[in-house]
Structure formats: structure tokens, C-alpha cells
Image (cartoon, rainbow, N blue to C red; front, side, top):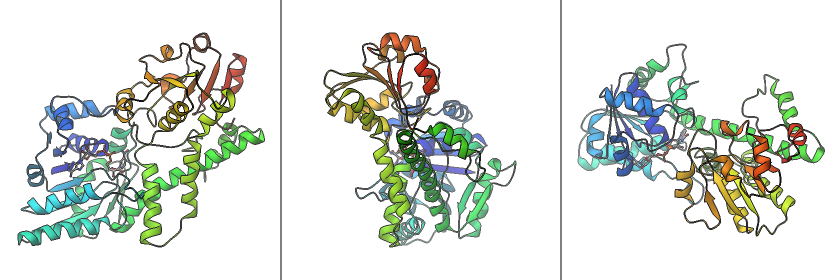
Length: 440
Ligand SMILES: NC(=O)c1ccc[n+]([C@@H]2O[C@H](COP(=O)([O-])OP(=O)(O)OC[C@H]3O[C@@H](n4cnc5c(N)ncnc54)[C@H](O)[C@@H]3O)[C@@H](O)[C@H]2O)c1
């Protein structure tokens, strides 16, 4: 099938590459000429494990192409996957300007049947808006061209995006139109061979499913973070508690890790957007979700608070080594990363920081330009030299089993603040390291 993917970011590039990998002819459109130039010259605009190989393979086979030419993209695909960003608006609601602009382009330029697929995370009712915008453009042109709009929310995880797209847990299709459902089933058939993963439903339910999934996951994290803060005060160990409750199949082990707050391009904005939809569109108060959001905001300040409790409020003259900048391992995504709150708070209290991250330092420089007192270092051990303490914010694999003797030797005093509970407190005590974790 000929497929155009509109928006070549984390979701669009992965979707486009994977759809090409199963034999489709894919054209990826982006308005950012630098992104397209990077891809056309064989480079990768994002860090996503395994994606470079899939892209290279399909470019070479002639099944995956890139363009900034809107008209070419609209003409090309029978299916038009919209995978543009839906960032938070000033009031926290999802900003739909990119989705609607992409839809308007389809209506403005289409000459034959189009299956328009909302892959971006969009509030309930967006498919209706997309439909209306396309219809409006067709009317303006005085033509009648058939089209369908379906919702197909994406559940991939950054850091495992290719694997998630290739072997999805479920493929949600929201469709009120038989032709569209049939086409979507055909597009996803190659990803649906082992057992049926298609969950077909009405459009509004599909739109809400994506928000409900992220809201549930965010809830588990905030719940565990609050439980961890309580465990700490009560002299309990949240890791033991986690294992104790995770063994209950009704609860399960997944997503029960306490830490220094969730970030990324999805949970924070999707929780906020769902709250806005509930309050403004539906007049429904979502008390649990309000608390999830507030608990997460507070959790991002837990590490800086522990640091101030140890070193005092005035951190002038104090220097910290920071391991991890990305909002989670295996990505360079810095959106809403907990590291950004930590860095801002420590700098505001007069400290200086040397940060190390295996892949996110370039992106960090881009999103936090010119911060006085923040420097970067290309090796984790070098970042420790002369620091008062090591602070860990992202649980990269390479931090799991470091040389603790070397850490102790490099730091002014052996102090570690660990926002991801990577080490055993008893082992740290045995090594003479002052160890501050979350809920232990
Ligand atoms: N990142 C994730 O892990 C993830 C997972 C599931 C769902 N989502 C959702 O998918 C959507 C995309 O997220 P992302 O992280 O890939 O975003 P992103 O910011 O990485 O990429 C979006 C891209 O769209 C381009 N763009 C904007 N308007 C355009 C237009 N009119 N035509 C062509 N290109 C245009 C931008 O230049 C950008 O490159 C969001 O709604 C997000 O919530 C993201």
C-alpha cells in the first residue's frame, strides 16, 4: 500500500520505517527541513535503538522516502497517517494546530480517496474536527472526494519503539466506517500474525483509550512515589513493599518503580490534557488524576530537597556530578525530564553541576541553552572529579554496576543521591558510601 506519514518525529519516523519494512511504499513528510535533510543524507534526527538499521534498509530498498513537499505527500499515500506533535497549550489542553493543519492540507490537495489516520494523541472529538476541516476545504474547492477518518492511537515506548511497533500488545482502531476498518486491518495484518491484536471500536472510545492508558500508568507511578515517601518516614523499604505487592497478579510488577518523577513527551501532557477535557468539555472532575499530576510535580523536587537537607539551603561553592539527563534510558528525549527540575533548583541555590548522559547531552544543550553553572562531560567517571556528591536521575544500564571505589576516590566525600533506586542501601553502607535513595 502507498502510505504517507505526516510528521517525522519519534512516532512518525518509527511508524513510517516499520510500515515500509513489511513491504509498503512509504513517504514521510516533515515541515522541518533540517530533519528531512538529515534523513536524506543517511543520518538520524533522534536516538532510538535499532531504528537506524530499519530506516537504512528500507531507504536502500526504495520503500522509504522523505520529503518537505506537502502536495507530493498528499498525492502519494492512499493512507495519510497524521503523527505530528500535540504539545500542551498554555492552559494544559492539547494544542491541535499541527493536527488540523495537516488535515487541512489533505483537504486542500487530495484528488482521490484518502484514509486519514489520527495517530497523534488527540482529545476525544478530534476525529470529528479533522473530518470537518477536510470537508470545509473540499467545499471551498467545490469538489466532492471521498475520505475516511479513523483513530489509531500509538502505544510505542521511546527506547523500545521499533520492537513495540513491530510486536504491539494491541492495535487500537477507532472507526465508524467499514471501508476504513477493512483498510486498517490490511495495513496492520503483518503485525497481527501471531494472534489477533486488533481492538476495533468506535472513534471516541479509541481516542479516550490512549489517554486512559497513559493516565493509568502515570497513576501507578505517582501512587508508588507517594508510598515511597511514606515508607521512608516509617522506616520501611519500598523495594520490599514493591516486590510484596507486585506478586499479586491483580497488581503485577510492571510500572511500580518509585523514582524522582515521571517526565517525557507523553505522561505529563496527556494527564494534563485529559484533565482539561474532563473539566472543560465534559464538566467532570477527575480527583484521582489531579492528585497524580500534583504528586508528580512534587516528586521532581524530592532529590533537590534531600540534597539541601544534607548540604544546607545555600549551595554556593558546592559542586555536583549528575548522571543521566534524558527522561528515561535509551532515548535522547529531554521533554519534561526530571533532570531539568533538579538542575534548575540546584543552580538556583548556587550550586554548580557537571552532567553526563550517554546520548542526551546534545539535546540537553539545545533545550537548556546558556545555563550558568552547568557543564557537560563525555565520561561518567570524569564528571565526578571534585564533586561533593553524585546525583543519579536516569537509570541507564551503564550506571547499574559502576566502580564504587573509583566513585569514592573521585568525589570529595562519598555521597550518592539516587533518584532511581539503582543500588542496595546495605551494600552502599558496607562501602562507606552515604546513600540517599527513594523510599528506602
Ligand atoms: N513520543 C512518544 O513516545 C509517543 C508515543 C505515543 C504517542 N505519541 C504521540 O504522537 C504524536 C507525535 O509525537 P512525537 O513524539 O513523535 O512528536 P515529535 O515532536 O517528535 O514529532 C512531530 C513532528 O511533526 C512535525 N510537524 C508538525 N506539523 C507538521 C505538519 N503540518 N506537516 C508535517 N510535519 C509536521 C514536526 O516538525 C515534528 O518533526 C504526539 O501526539 C504524541 O503525544 C508519542
